[in-house]
Length: 385
Length: 241
Image (cartoon, rainbow over all chains, first blue to last red; front, side):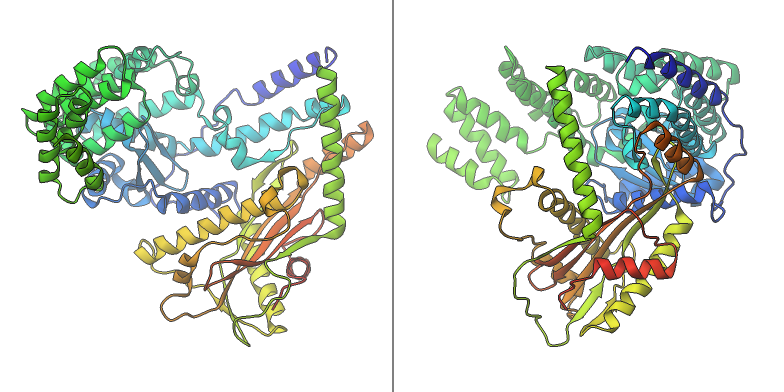
C-alpha cells in the first residue's frame, strides 16, 4: 500500500490543478433550452426524470394558497426567468431549497418555517437561482468527470494490487454529498447573485444576512459540529453573513421585509410544519426556531401548544410540569388547537387529576367530534368517569 | 483478521464474477407466477407502459454519464421492436396514454408506475442471486402490485395485462476503451459497458406479476434498430402470451 501513496498523491494534485479555475461561461438566458446532443441535454434528461418523481411525491405540499404565494415570491425574484422555473414545496423539516439545471426548484418546508419574513425567504430563493443562472450543476458534473478521470491510474494501481476499481452510476455518486455539493466558490458566487436579485426586486437588503446568523445559532444550540454535511460544502456561515452584511452597508438601498404578509401566508401550515419538526426530535434546534416565532407573536396559543409538545416529547426531568404549564398557557391564548385539551387531559390523567382530565378530554371531543382517535379517547373517559 | 476478511471478499468477488459470466451466457432468467399460464381472455390486450430506458457513456473512470440522444433513439427502437415481437403473438398491444399532467388520474397512475419500479427492484434483489434470497419466497414467485393497478386500465377496462420494460445500457467511451486496454496490460480487468434490464407482465385485474424476466448482456446496442430487436427478443424470449 505504501508504494501506492505517491501515485495517489500525484493523481490528486493533477486533478486539483485541472479543476482549480471555475469556468466562466455565459449565464442561462430566459427560455433557454439545451442544444440537442449536448452535455447539458444529457443532464436535463436525468433532471427531468428526477422532477417527475418530485412532482408525484407523497411529500409534496399541494395546498394551492401556499403554492401561489411561493410562486409569487419566486417570480418577483426571478423576473424574466419566472416562466422557466417550476416550484415544488416538499415536506421536509430542514432548512433547504435547491434548483436543478432544468428549472425545477424544490423548497423544503423547514425553510418556510425558518425564514422570518418574505425578504429572508426571497434571498434564499435568489441564492438558488444564482446556482441556476451560473450553471453550477453542469460545471460540477464536468468537474466530476475530469477529477475522477485523473484518478484512473490510481484505480488501475489499486486494481493491480488486488482491490476493486471504482465504478458507479452518476446518480449514485451524486447522492454522496461530497460530490453533489457546490464548491465554496460557487456558493460565494450564488450569494452575490442572490443579493443582487433581492435588491433589484425591491426587498430590504439587510434581510440577506440574518437567516445565516440564525442557522449558526441553531447549529450551536444543538452543539453540532460546524463541519456537518451542510457546513462542509458551504463557506463558513460567519463569513457569509459578514459578506452579506457588508454588501447591505455598501448598497444602502431601501426596501421592505414584508413580515406581515409572509406570516399570513405560512400561518395556515405552521402547526403542521412544527409537528414535522417535533417528529425529528431535534429539540434544541427546534427551540431556536420556536423562539423566533414567539418573537413574531402570531397565534400564540398554537406556539405554546407546540412548546408543550416539545417538553412532553423530550420527557426529561421536570418536563412534565413544564408541558402542563405550557398547555394551560396555550388554552388561555388565541389559536390553541383542540389537541391541546387532549394532550393536557392525558397528562393530567396520568397524574391522577381525574376530574380536570375528564373535562379536557370532553372539550377535545366537543371541538373535534370526528377525531380519528375518538374511540380511544372515549375509552379513557369511561375509565375516568 | 484483516487478511481473513480480505480473503472472504475475494471469494465473494469471484462468485459474483462467475455469476455475471453465467448470466451473460444464459442471457435471461425468467419467473412465472404459476407453471400453467392461462390468459384471462383468448386474445388478450396488453397495455404497453412507457419503457424506462436510460443509456449512458462510461467515462475513463467508469462512471456512467447519461446520454439523452442515445436514450431517445433507444426508446424508439425498443418501441418498434416490442411492436414487431407482439405482431407474431396472440395479443393486441395498446400504447399507454398518460392522463393530463397534474390531474388526479395522472397522480394515481404515476404512483402505480413507481410501485412497479419498487416491486421490480425487490424481485431483482431477492430472486436473482442466492445472497439475498428470501426464505419465504424460495419455491415460489409471488409478487403483486395489488388491485390498485385496475386504475391503469381505467373504467373502460382497455386491457387485461400491462407490460413494463426497464433497460439500462452503457457504452465505453474512447477514453474508457483506452483504460481497458491499459488495464489488460497490467492484468487488471476493467469492466466496459453492460446492458441490464427486466420486463414484467402484470395482470390488471389482480395486480399480480405473472411473468418476469431479467437480462444481463455485456454486448448489445440499443442505439440501432437491429441489435435493439435482438435485445427485446432475448428479454421477451419465453413471453407467456
